[in-house]
Length: 270
Image (cartoon, rainbow, N blue to C red; front, side, top):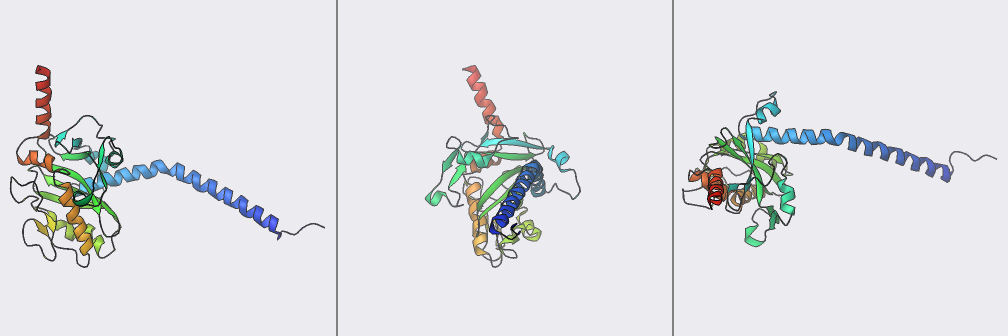
């Protein structure tokens, strides 16, 4: 007598076969779509860089506009440019994990909650690379629920902020997520990072309440920990631990490439 279709053996066989077929379809789709995902991620990154520099307009050709921006890799320990890495492909997240190109932070030095940080980073120059109108810096640090990643654009004086934007965060919608509210971001334009020409400690911060001076922006209502996270990441990345040495060269009127070129000439003469 033939067995029915409801036997345990047949049910398990069909279920197993269905799982295999679905796994193959999902895996194939993930592999096939990965190049498209990477392309979209790269396009989003470039769009954010253009946006923080006030160069983005809806519908524009992002790739064409981005060709007007010059990427350079900076050695943050010296504030000078380096040709050791290709700025088009350099990955500062991977560099942070590599003992040869990154370092461990602990205690009071790790105010942004990063644990490890890279010694080199790609910056983006708007205008003449030797005398840029804007310098776009990558920034990141812990918010309330996780890592916030974004960019800050600074004028060629190395002190005046053009804008700030975040392309990745997990802050609470309507509260901490207001870091991407255009009205809040507009407050950053024209703010001063340092209190005076000699200072190496950033004075810029998110206020507890309303901004009181040119070094503060209004606090995010109901999002104190996110506001503190923004302040902490800026205090880190704009200090000598981050881009402080690099920005100091612009504030002193010394283009970062000049020192490097002078070193090369001296080595050639020796």
